[in-house]
Image (cartoon, rainbow, N blue to C red; front, side):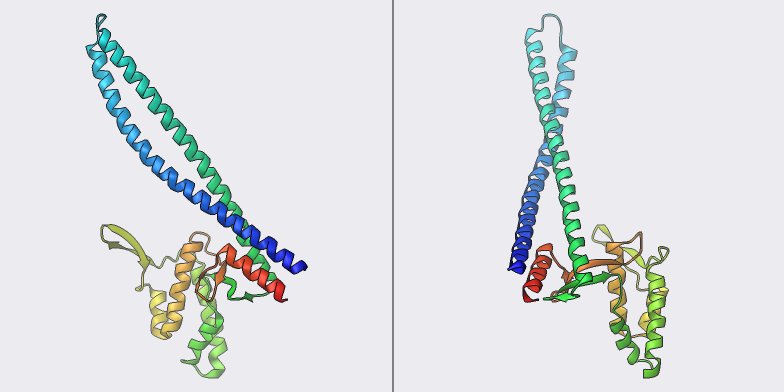
Length: 256
């Protein structure tokens, strides 16, 4: 009964977070439309200001109609300025809400990751993956294709030590910029000396694993260059959602 209550509470929390995230996403989409409206308003204000400047230059003491026109345009400009101020305030409110929601989601992910690290390492396909790292089994598998069995473990440790030193070195930047249409795109520089050495001395499986690790490190921690744990869906080879993590924990507790 206790496990069922825990699972029910976890699922309700996940659903509440999912609903809140969806609502916030819709608000952000609405805000993007409002940003377009702001740009149009700014163009209108610029045109109205030009018209006002022209009318003021032509105005004289007897220009009653011109004065009325000026007053009308000034009122119109005031209304548009107030509309822009309102939209800008709404923009700030939504950005603050989004930042707070993101912080809460990150805290929830950390709690799920800690639970998995301290307890079951793999629950219904959900586990923790160290981003930027390489599984020792991948290195061992490749080493067995090249070296005698009595050298495999030593070669594995030697490779892994060199790999960690390289990927955590902030001065190592195995990327280059290429053109993709009219835009620059960052890609892995396969002419990098270290990467070329792996491709030459080892097999494609390990080489691809290193490229994956390099890409993950650049995505998760390009400046700090230390490994980061991520909640991972091993069945689908992607980052797991909070809802998936909560469900896996609930199923584990019930089963246990």
